[in-house]
Amino acid sequence: RQLAFSREWITRKRFKVASLKVMPVRGDSMLPKLSDGDTVLVNTADTRIVDGRIYALVIGHEAKIKTLRRGADGSLIIISENPDKRTYPDDVVPPTEANDVYIIGRAVQRAGDL
Image 1 (cartoon, rainbow, N blue to C red):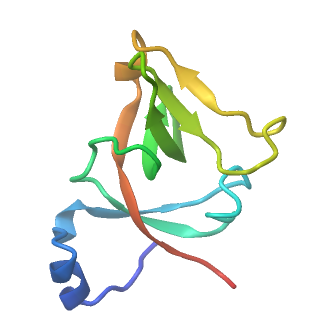
Image 2 (cartoon, rainbow, N blue to C red; image 1 turned 60 degrees about the vertical axis):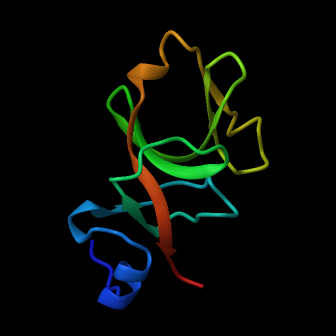
């Protein structure tokens, strides 16, 4: 996938072109923020977790786009934005396993159908 952005926008945001990647959104777990079929621009140079931001990450062998928070105990809380928590529950990764989650980068822009 490709997205077009002006060099002025990239410069203003202080991004490096080589650090920008696009990822497709699959499924409804991030509704209403992200929809199935959206494309997300990910800044791979920004992997520091800031509570409440959306990140591309890998858990096991699966890439995901999720909201992240740190628990008070150092755990990593992986949040699906969909309010149907029975279908899309949040995952808590204990502090002892938090380093097993690979952060690809922070999502900085989305593109999708209206």
